[in-house]
Image (cartoon, rainbow, N blue to C red; front, top):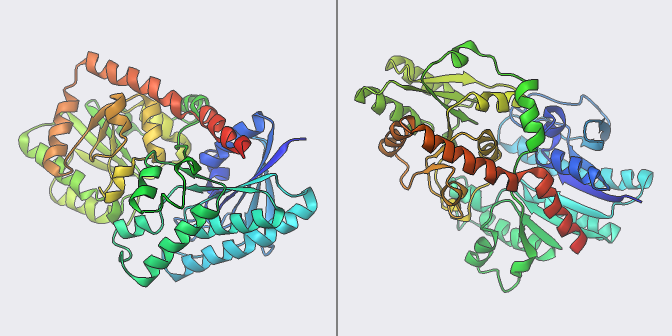
Length: 419
């Protein structure tokens, strides 16, 4: 009989409709290796919160994804917009309802053999631990974002407030109760040590399984879902591509300032193409228009399935975000691995611990994140020789094999079977 693996991820619904993502691909390769995965997620879409995937009054809906032969259970939660009170209440909805749904579903199909509870927020991890206790099985807690550490790093909450201390206490409790803890960045054990928790949480409990790509599907999608914008395709200079949000936290104003410096230097052999959206887009677009910056262009959102085709047509991939204290633990952004899979040189505007770009020589990583250093790096990368580009490409092609989800699933299975 196939071993039943239940994956709890509040925000996994987008992976069903976009046909890709961490738990979509884990489910795909778990199924191919003889497991029976089921993904539990919320029925409401986050970002933007006005869109609802499933108009339903039921507590839950079951949908089958035939391409990966896996089941998704969409759990009812309230609608919300933004990151205010209603989003928090939506988290509480999912926490309460996923436990009710799991119990009902278990009556229909039998209990799971193991639960993988995945953050972003910790309530999903707590729900997973409570369900595992009810079913008397093991629970793997997967941490993809450090709460509250990331909230502190971005200035959303104060480090020494009562709420923050309570969240730290809860975080430690989760790590102690979990049978294994998966962290998506390589410095997870460093984080435990820095918090002073290593006496209570042994290092061998922490496992690093990064994000990645389904490499075979990624390559197929270059042809299956072509990106055909003529302004992009017909531009003859170096195409520098950024994909992601355009919010305060992304700090794209630095990139605009770097483009302005290069214009003033008389460097015209490139254009920066910004793909994505967010509250800062309007202001930045207006600034570029008012200052006649034609070397940077905002392209808006495109379907996720077209990203491989887009990156295949680019020359340099721009990895940029606000630098924070969390960078010391490494990185594991989804788009970073999409960049790697494209083979193009990566310009990373900040420095991290356990750096893949630096260690594997897949591009250039900057020590200082400011407009001057970024403009210098863009000028340098636009003048790379064909031999230098080939070396970056070769290194990227070797490196991405370590982050193919077929290989990452083997690591996950090892954790499951050890338990």
